[in-house]
Image (cartoon, rainbow, N blue to C red):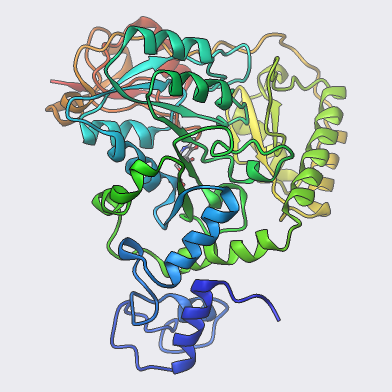
Length: 453
Ligand SMILES: Cc1ncc(COP(=O)(O)O)c(C=O)c1O
């Protein structure tokens, strides 16, 4: 018999009661007039805050037990469940440190969700640019010394906010950055969306083990969890009392029980004690594929003097004389759907749920690769270092108009311009657009941009 994790137990008890469901949601536990269908079972579990099923923002029953189990697993003082993805956790983290008109030292490789949250909270970022000798795209590694320099120059910041791993799996030195933040008595917030599984590396590479004050895990990205399932971990007790209230400022009042249940089920998966071995096996398979790819002339992601998450296979696209769209079609011919393909790089994300046959398809794809390499160096994709002319918040809420990118030089951006994935904005709201930015925007296939009137 499989272990009944806390929330599953509560919902199963509710299903057993066979109650007439005079509550939300409208499907009443069935898919379309009770006709059997492969999704029907899922509908039965999609309930609302009925008696015994607890309530996310006032959790004191089954949901609280699930959260406590995650806090024990991840070594956090408190962990909050999110059915609104890491986005909701990022909003919560920033709302916990926000002061009116406050500043945040932030790695420029951050996700669009963090920028939106800063705009809503009236926070102004002070950028630290990643070192792109490691990594690719607009990602890269953040250096502790660059963060120290900004802390020295800005004595009034609310927090340091970093994203690691980046979208391509490059890891920054969280331990080194955390030590510096502690010395300056500034909280460290980590967007670990792509790294829930890093807890299960030996030694752990999870930000909570490396000294972060607050950290979010987008469980659904790498663990067997439904889209939208995420965790907010709190290591610094001072943030516990307000955490639920801050989350409720942004979250839906109807968090999905299916999503929360799938997080709850993940506890059972973790407690089986095989996660480390399973992820070690994934990393070994990806490294073997990388070796094959390198032998075929693919250029691999450079981790340079630091660590990388080896659950992602990053392949060069730029050196074959074909577009990203053509590269994607070649992958699909072998029955492979990638996470991301651009004209420059492709990313394949693996987890223990990928079975041997999946890897064999990638082997066949690589074995059949017959194009000659025609280019040596990857095109530069460094984010332009633009001057802010307005705050994020004023730019986002200012009257605006859409203009063709080539007519935007000298104008102030009103919205993020962001190829997604990887979701790292090329231009930030409030920044004055220059020639380099226009060039990069065009490379990213962006033709129009919203600017302040
Ligand atoms: C680095 C990073 N942070 C945050 C997010 C948002 O995560 P979610 O989709 O779980 O809200 C993403 C999504 O892709 C991401 O790549």
